[in-house]
Amino acid sequence: MRDPNDPCLFCAPRDVTRRNALAYAARDSYPVSPGHTLILPLRHCSDFFDLSPEEMAACMELLAEERRALDREFKPDGYNVGLNVGQAGGQSVLHAHIHLIPRYAGDHPNPRGGIRQIIPGKADYPRGGRGAE
Image (cartoon, rainbow, N blue to C red; front, side):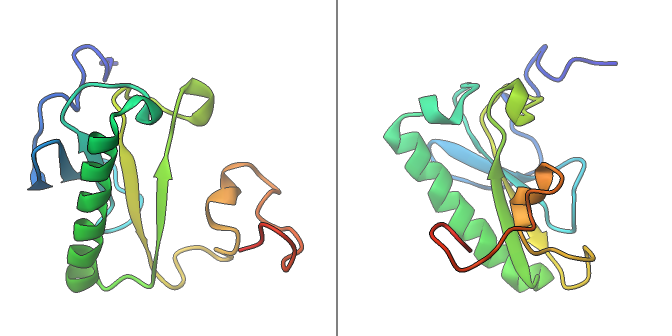
């Protein structure tokens, strides 16, 4: 099996849907749903939190632009936005990237809790208190 980090898959932008001076967007090669998009800094940096403020802003700008484009093209019912940082966080390609995942009514039997479902049993909690969605 090929190592996606040798060389880094994301250091050579391909299938770019949108770009600015510091970042680019591309559809995920293994999409979770139609329109699943990645937002990536052009500079190789494994940890999102090590990006410069300008790189973070460039990524957020593309995130918003891609969301508007996905709304027009795919008309999803919702979104998940996520970052995997470090091996324990599920990061497999060591180049910072943001997942913009369109969600569609019925794509999961119980989507409540959203990204909390990455750890079984953590999506179902009492709502209404501090920190509740």
